[in-house]
Length: 261
Image (cartoon, rainbow, N blue to C red; front, side, top):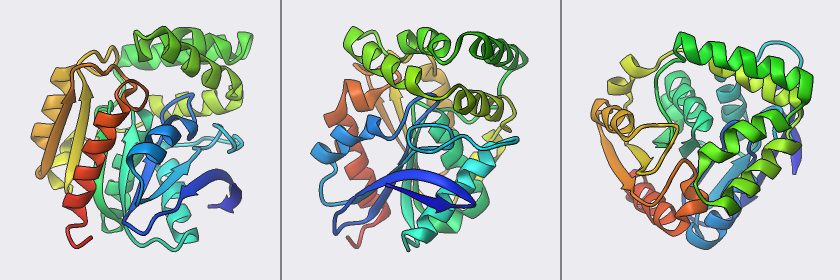
């Protein structure tokens, strides 16, 4: 499904249920399909909203500079379009930065904040430089250059690497470049973490090659009302590697955020 949201086309789907609403946001180079199997099997009964961020999946890239805050605004306007007042938002990796921006901009629209294999810091100068180099390589060689670099970092499982590679490779170069610029320019949200007024959950993979456990634990410590879920068998993609554990963790968190349900 695709509709005009916040001034541009946005692809999304809604898995209908009578329970509370859960908005799941994917990360760099991926799309909403990463959540589908886990959600259909382990989140039945909830209304699960799966969007494609700008330049990914069914959502075309937009002209001009895109910031993480703009992507957060897209999610808030999607909620308006669907006539949903409050959601539990769960963001994976880059999706976690978008979820944090939603909390920063409109915490009143959130019932809970889930950060899955994500972080709250800004890019280091070295990371920014790496993103600039990656943008240059994508301009020369296309999306497969990011697929070649990123897919092996997501999981040690060759099947999951192949699945991620295929999604990243088909993502438009313009979409990847826009997202990389947004990542490089994102602000740190560390100082904001203790001020977040809604329940939060940090999900960390014991084998994550991108977000170290120590960083995830520190983020959980700074959040004022946080549950911490460490999944030893997961890397950076627990929705693929350990879907049942992640699904059950999200179910438990949703019940905390919507106790009346």
